[in-house]
Image (cartoon, rainbow over all chains, first blue to last red; front, side, top):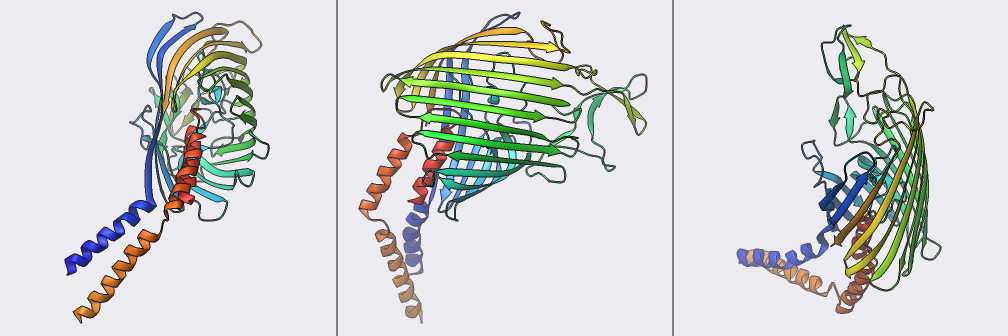
Length: 398
Length: 64
């Protein structure tokens, strides 16, 4: 009888559990069937292979949602790098969403171009000089209020970098350096020592961000966002402000995004700068002729004024350090303008796949300390160069 | 004594079974499927917004 009751309980309760807990694996894949690139002063190249590959696992039960996005194409030897997002969201309070974990900090109105990603997410042939990009791989807690029904959503996020600089017992930063460490032959610093951390401490760093989305006007979404970040070693805080809009109707799609950002980093951080001001503008549109065919265009402009740190040798605990030779030590100021134009067509193969073919032209104009037309500037890729790209890709999502 | 335990356990199990079966009406299921379809239809293959759109649809399904 006991067995019977146990079996009956298992049989009756199992459907309840499987009904309330649901999980789904979703993915986005773009395969480059033909990717031709030509950068001025370098040899042209033809690539075939995977352009984008993302997998995200969702699990939801009642008011809780959990998600893990796998970092399949990332460097998996770094601790916690297997997933670029891993968070849980609680929706138990009416119109509120509280999210805790690791993921993307929202403040921009990000949009893919035609054949390349936006400058804000590494979409460039020539490499771009902007510091304010998609803020991903961050430890965060966010509070979102609103939804489409209310006509707006406001998301406030407290965040920190998932890589923290390491300090010794005296409070000095640890360096990755090589060399003898004497006055004549100093140790050359390439970077600070960092460690992957699952959670950040506000004593060492603090990031804040806010994104407001407004949906009241039919088919339009207007956004504005702000972001702030400062860590213990940085003299000045970094901040950015963003304005965006998206039109999403059955015939037309239109997107625009504008950013002003200021960045200041400590001398040996990755992509360091003493003072950087940047302006970014993206605008694009897609016109659908019918259910299958559409044409697209995307324009992006980026203006950056970047003043580098000035470096001198220094001694700590009897060891003399100097900046690595790859770093400009004289505090150069580089003013650069980059722009790219994309045009293409898209054919819908099925409900969840399309083929895109398009061309891209990109140009970067840069001057160092007021000197123009230099073909080499330390720390600047492809200074005063132009590039062409022709790409045909198949995108598939599920 | 054994009978006294068995009977409530049996009643409890049967009640759970009946409540579980009557929890969802067929018409509710139809409405849920319909709204689920319309949400998933609005998901576009735009790389930057794809997973956000998917998450919204999953939340809507959960709220049903």
